[in-house]
Length: 154
Image (cartoon, rainbow, N blue to C red; front, side, top):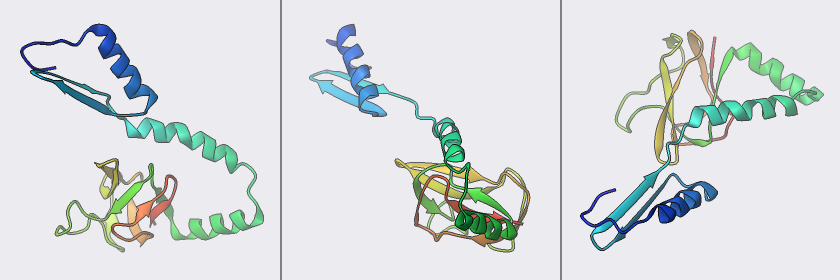
């Protein structure tokens, strides 16, 4: 909060924070004359993605023949790097920068391989395995879904 004369009472602040939570907002800012208030909620993307993973695993418990075929094809390409969130895929930190990785490049566990922009936040995606990039499955600027294969590592 900033300003000389704070006219916001605790009940009002409590109502604003409930509004923030109920509407899944990350920030509310209000100004009234010389008074201003900003309420922010930290957004942690990774735990939400991890919590959603068991639901996806449960829905895939009994795969059909077609799903078996897809899994077999995918495993022959190597270990997939999966999108942990919905967003926009970027191969480099800026349009004029070189890509984080290219096909044929050797990477180590923990290396940055791409960025996924979600809600105007740039999330750097790191490799969970070491190896060689076998295939990059999405193009720069493409939208990606949670659980979508971004690339394969041999």
